[in-house]
Image: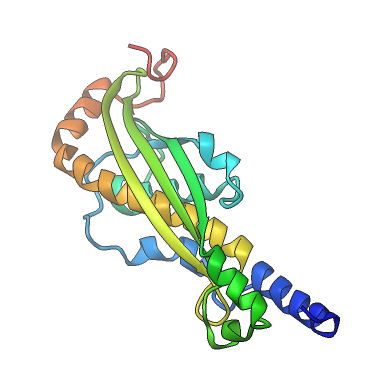
Length: 218
């Protein structure tokens, strides 16, 4: 590449990789609010617990993203609205697997050879793909696991100007979208068992006033 073009191309590439035109915060935390597929009020209030595990080893999700997404999931779909703070157990999210791949390197090379011109009209530079396996356990106030559900999410987020995200934003959004898709698979499973779970949680009583065994120990 001629030296006279190296600096402008490097600057454009840097801007594309680090920033994007779309708001990643809105994309990460807005979707759950518009999801009306499951009615609220199926379970009594539960305390959320998150074990991010392999998700913390990726370059995408922020440390509190999984916790925030799961709390939203509980608040909008699982937890029964109550005027007090009585909790009848726990909902524990465990990230079992989180694999990230970057694809489109050939397209990235083409972009560099053409001085990034295609990126100016919205052609992607690359894609982030995350495959995430999640497990949700419902645990009563005495620490007994009464149900376990699993789901797998596959996401694909483009790095591009105008019609995509910056590199750091795309990596984060790919992780969060994969988690949401895994929870989408878990939600109807839990919905189907809601009546049984409600009875079991009520039988065990609220968390307050009960000395629990370590969570998950029968």
